[in-house]
Amino acid sequence: MDKSIQITFVQVYEVQDEHRGTEKATRYRADQKVKMDPASAHHFLSRGVAELTVAEKG
Image 1: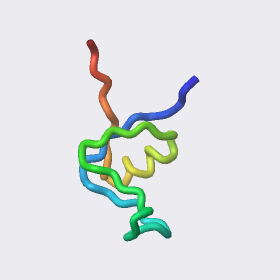
Image 2: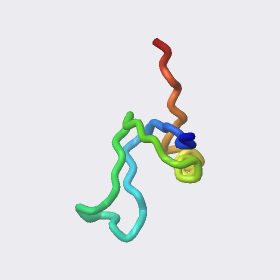
Image 3: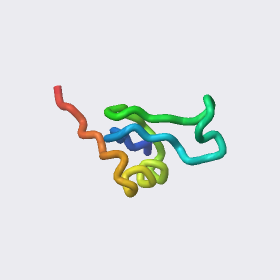
Image 4: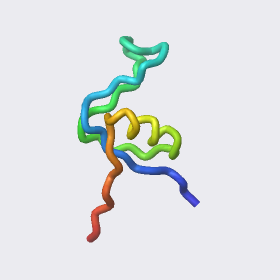
C-alpha cells in the first residue's frame, strides 16, 4: 500500500542542505506537484511552502 502524500508547492523553494546554491540543489517550482513520504510532506506543509493536493474527480 502506498503511503505517500501528494503536495503542491505554493512558492519556489530550494532545499536547505549541503547542495544549496549549487547545480545539485533540489528545487521545487511554484505549482509543482510532488508525491513524498508523510514526514517529508509534513516538513514542507508546516513551513507554509506547500499545500496538500486535492484529488480531482473525473
